[in-house]
Length: 276
Image 1: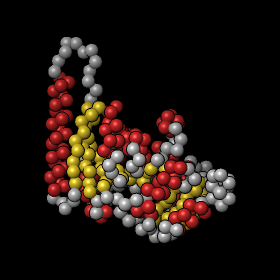
Image 2: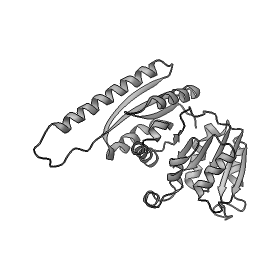
Image 3: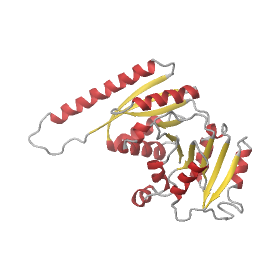
Image 4: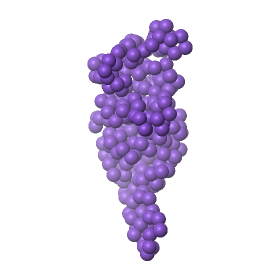
């Protein structure tokens, strides 16, 4: 996948670090930046008497704040040599994912910086919009430093699922420049119609035909959860990025009982590439 357009969602409240890391990433990739500045408004009051203009006044303040943030971001971007455009989104929380999804259709990747990632409400809307309503992958960067456009070591979480296969294909731009790709399987079981007789070998062979040096790491979880085992292995192999398929179980089940994707979103120590 060639990265020519990068979409980055900026919170109206915090955006300075995210803008800086987005500029550095796009400059390295030679990509156009689609900057989406979002303000999720408060829900209007229902059946409040007497009727006042308080809520309308607050709404106008939020709209003005959104405009000011977009103007400030534009000024920062204009000081770079970056090709960019800016979109302003004023929406309710319930509809923010739909608005984000519409813009995501026209990007190669969505970059989520540490400030947006640290905003739980905004991160949830980005995930719901991009992963569930568009074909565009997400690169979430939890660190206040630019994500490496050419990581030297990548952990590829592999479980023979459709989601993992799509994540692999969509992350090729990163995998091809790696010194090592660690195809990591947690407690793999050899099955003819799943992992094959030798788990991980087939995906490693596929990657090698693309000129990618891949190593198969079959690890035992022991008393650890799958997500904990993945995070620990990422540290052990010095991974600069984790690539994985997202939500290969029903979303409601993941939210009610937790899941690998949900846990990795909360506490992955390195940039996390997700596709579904």
